[in-house]
Amino acid sequence: MHFIVLIAAAWWISINQLDWWGYLSLSIVAGNISGLGINTGHELGHKKGKFEKTLAKLVLAVPFYGHFTIDHNQGHHRDVATPIDGSSSRMGENFYAFVCREIPAAITRSFKTENIRLQRRKQDFLCFDNQIFQSYVISTILQGSIIVMFGLQIIPFLFIHNIFAWLQLSSANYIEHYGLLRQKDGLDHYERCKPHHSWNSNHVFSNLVLFHLQRHSDHHTHPTRRYQSLKSYDDLPSLPNGYLGCYLVAYIPWLWFYIMDKKLLKLSHINGDLSKVNLDPRKKMTLIKKYQEYN
Image (cartoon, rainbow, N blue to C red; front, side, top):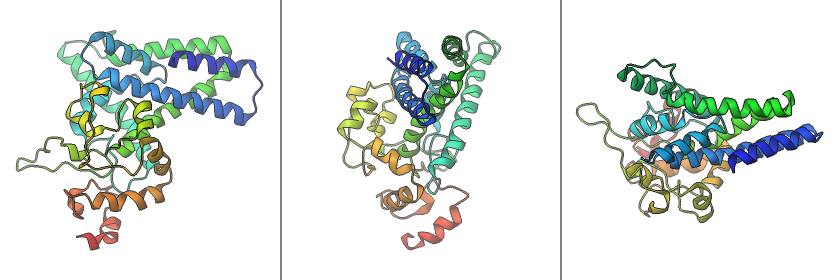
């Protein structure tokens, strides 16, 4: 479906003289649909079977995001809810600043992780066994073929499509762990990820569209559990709306901060203690002054 949507949208643009707003709108819609494809790749990439992992590489090739599975499985799930995780947003960090930090960090971490794996196998980074490049090759063939078939006018479409697909993922990452922080033990190691280190929601429409992604605490507790088996619990950090509604709020920073900052500080395991919050270091002093009445 995701391959068909991308090719069909590109074909439609190529045979019609669209105004700039029509060109832009179709590019964004196609990108948002491919963003859902990243979520499909997320579900498939967590599975142990080779067939499903291969399908993950295929669907992630559509928006040119083949590094995602390695970064997410081996990076995000290890570092989640810590300051070193590029995919965990910090209190006081707006969505746009997060995107500028998260996307480069994901690419960098995935390349480093895959390079370590290949070095252990005594292989060069530039080899066919590189799992990132396997997906990138499919992306290059797919999008290169689209340019050949429909002309150079399709390049801006592909660029906008890719960016908005990536922003779908960034939107989810932004709201899933906002401000939540794993504490360190006596050996300066982060505690094990616990259910209260993820924000959750249980709205029907978002569940259907996103394969129960918003039952996020259970996903981090059982990463290989299939989406239809993920459970929802009432006593965990809960978002004020479904994922799609929270995306819209997140795009308006002052509104997101107004709703979520106090909600974060009122969580039972935080109880107003900013030392238990993953703070944006650039906003740390401002946040301490603003919310000092909670301490």
